[in-house]
Length: 358
Image: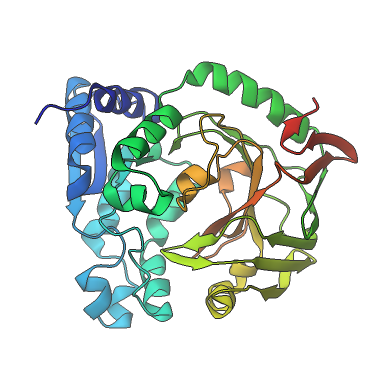
């Protein structure tokens, strides 16, 4: 079957910009059978660079038979051969194209936590940016259904979000990052929300298509013990491994979530926050900047980039942006500020209703 030319353009972007593959590299390519068109295009591009694609393809990208059947003690331990692949590879390209958009939601809480624990060696290396890596979205029916689109509509949506002039996007986002790099305190005000966090001593990162694809965010690791106030995620569901939490509300004191509630799946929210000590602290503050993404799709890889939103992640922080919070989870939750919202940097109003004032 003839491949969409946009798929080849996408693959070149991943191999040349997101993970700038060099001759002789061993590049881990992860995905499932539905991502075959993009996976094959990526492998071709890696080969043309004189490098080796190390292919890991599964049927289920979260969970699977092993996660459902293995003893918990075994499930939480990283297999030595898998650990060696993660530790020795020169780059990682992960293609996300699930057969079921709710993969993993069938796993009991303790099994999902064990799966996350086994991923710790990979997460530690990527969070430290010790290896170039990217997670790339590929349009499949399950994701189109979740987004309320036909497959063709969703394909167009994906390519509009990823095939952008990333050098121009980088320059625009750099100007936004400069505002927050110079600030010690950020205040977010919106529907049900008045939250203050500290960026003192922390530098930001501009995601211009080199880590996540689509790119389109400026993000920070907030000071772990300085978040105060309330945030209510009333506009969109908070989605974590296929489970949807509606109306999540978090109250922070001294950087820690001390009260959590939700209209739907409150017990799941609280149980996830109780995963470990670091799960109740803020690991990331991100600002959505991708003008090619305007609608919520229940896919956080896109939703956190919606222009005019912010996202807050509870759990592990990026060490390369100064974070020190450790956790088995990293849950990005999106807050829409386009209809009613303000962001202040050191008391100065810098964004109102999704529009930049700087």
